Image: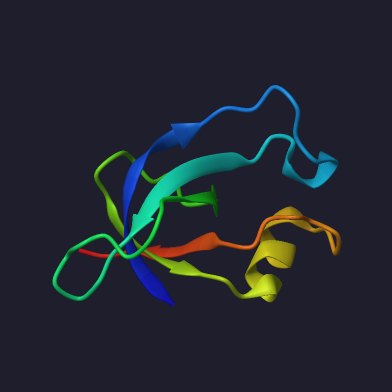
Length: 84
């Protein structure tokens, strides 16, 4: 798991069929001190995160399969929860 800050949402005119109707956000992974940890990621969001929200991300393929109902979804990261 990785903490991250949501920077905004993404729109795509062409998506893999498993992502049609799914929400994608851009999230910046963070280090413990709050500094950026690498480049921003395109993340599958089923919780309705807003820009500026602090979240934790998971790269667990089971979470993506549960969200999309697809075994062939190309997404790697998904929002696992919101951090208060």
